[in-house]
Every structure is written in structure tokens, then in C-alpha cells.
Image 1 (cartoon, rainbow, N blue to C red):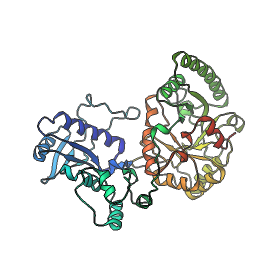
Image 2: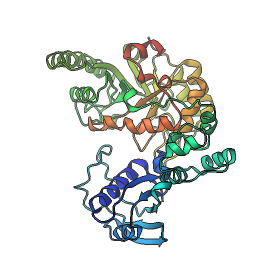
Image 3: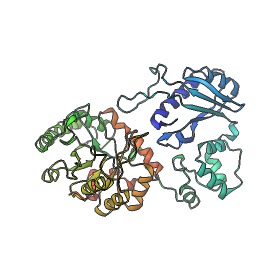
Image 4: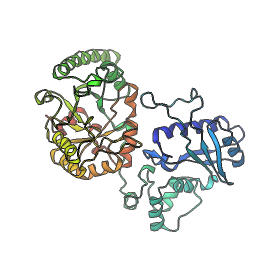
Length: 436
């Protein structure tokens, strides 16, 4: 059974709250999710918790009675495995922000609860977090593995290593980095200064332009680009050239009104950038005329149609956009959807090589059902010197906050602030963007 990370987050919060509210007699000292979830994997195979408590038998009894548990699978003195129900008990008491109107079910997921002595919690936390390849590399290089540490940081220090962030523990380069004391200073959500791919109710969004900008300001951003769809996306009221130019004129009015309100309230200013998400047509041409795209401050190019075309045709369409000097970034580049819709069949070596050659940015789309690029593609982009843009692709003001999922993916790839274009001010983004 596979579920997405944001769905697993809901289940984690549910069980943490359930145990916390029922802890009058258990004396639960620590309870943390481990495994795939702690490593921020985009897809979680099994949810696991590590628990320190006085009475594991009473904890397991409480969990077996939980409304979310369909049945216990197995139990030892230290571990309880259960299978969850498919549907959600009343979630009124559990407030978890999820994108749009998604309501994550429990999916019949398997969940494991492991108990451990508090004196061994740190060592067990490392081991239960994984991944298997990370554990193998550490054990091969640094045997014997010590026990008896209550804190994970102390465990790493006993090995002569700095603490390795869980999201890096995939057995790639993190052990070498730690040995050399050169772990990357990973990007954080607070590093993002702007959002460069969002939508309004002019096309398929929920909220109007002003409310999107005001929400971005409340979220602490310095700038936001509203990038509604071009005319090819006709079912979403995509815009032609004349309509786009009219929208940009409206943006000037909105910016002036927000500037006035901001000054009166003593708030940090925010800049509204004139943008567009232009479709890459099945023919390979841009959906809007170049002379209009040249007037945009920011152009996002993407594919929404023609996914069944040949590998060569899809590759050529993406390359045409990369080679177009008006295009700043390719959005959700591989076109995948999680958990089961695969990437487009394209020559990705050509695509990445061209993006590096032409200075075209690639998007890390933060919607948790996209997370496109994936972590390995982000690593490849970094190695080629391609700047990543972490965008929300928000279709509502609430969904502006999904950039935290993009940050998860970026951290798994080892990205730092210098690797991501929108960690910079808008004036600095313009300096590094090829579109002038």
C-alpha cells in the first residue's frame, strides 16, 4: 500500500493526538514517526512510530481500540502492527491543512508502533529512520554501531559525524559529506522570497488576483507572479493575447491599491509580477504570440495536451520552449502525477542538457500530487547548473502554502539557497533570468 506524504501526515497527526489525549495512564515520554515519513519521501509505504512509554502493553491495548484501526496484524513485547480502516473517523477535531479540498482517507494502511527504552531512543531513531542503504553504508564504514544513546545527535557524535538530516539518508552521498564535514546547508521554507507560478479565478483558480497577492503578503513573501492559463486551455477560460494584456493593466491598479493599504498598515511591501502560463502546443509552438510574451515579466511554459504523442515529438515540444528566449521556466516538466501517473515519454537527457545550455529554469512544482521535478531530477539539475524554481501552482489562496512540500523535495535533493532562483529578491531573479 502506498500513500502520499501529505496523506501520511494527516494519519501521523491523528495518532499523535489520539495517544496524547489518552495518555493519563501511559506516561508516553516520546513518540515520533520514523521510516519513509521522517525522510520526507513523496510516497510512504508503511507508517511507523517509535515510542518511549512506561507500559507498552497498555499502549498497544489503547491502539487496538482506536477507531482508525481495523484490526491488529501482529504483536510482540516491543512492536504492534495494525491495519487501518479505509474511511476517516470524524476529523472535526483534527485540523490539517491539505491542498485544495482533498480529504485524505486512511487507505487501509499498515502502521507499526515500536517501543524502546528511553536510554536507547537516539540509536533506535537512527535505525528505524533508515533508509536500508544509508544504514548499510554507515555500518560498513563505521562498525561497530554503538548503542545506549537517548539522543540521535549524540549517536552521530559517537561515530565522529555531524547529525545528518533524515531527508538526506538515502545512501547517496550523505555519509561521504558527513565524513568530510561538508553536509549541504539545506534550503528551508523561510528562504523562499517569492512564488512564481499561481492562478486566479480569471482562469481555473478560486480567488481573485488581489486576494492571492494579499495572502502571499501575509505568508511573508516579497513578490508573487500570477500566471493564469493561455487560450489553449479553453475549458479553464484560458486567455488570448488581448485578454492577457487587459489583465496586466488590471494588475497595475491592484498593485497601486495594495501599495496604499500596505503603507497605511505599516506592512512589508509585496510586488505583483505580470506573468502567464503559456501552453506548449501539440505543434510545438507557443500558444501566444512572441511579441506579447516579450512584454511579460515572467513566462511559465508547460504541456497540458498531447501526452500520447511520440517520444521525439514531446521532446521537441519541450526543447522548443527551452530555446524560446521569452520562456523563463518549464513548469511541472515531466508531467507526472503521484502516485501512479508516470512521467512523459521524452528524452530527458536532451531536455536537461538544453535547459543548461540555454539558461532556462526548471520548476519544482510543490503540489503534493505532482512534486515535479522529483528529487533525483533536482540533483541532476543542480549538477548541470540549472536553477530550480520552487512554485506552489496554487489555484487558491490557501494552496499558496503547499510550497512546504516542494521544500521537502528540494531538501531530499540536497538543494541549498543558491540552487533555487526564488530564494533571491525579484531584482536578483531578473539578473539571473535570461529573459530581459
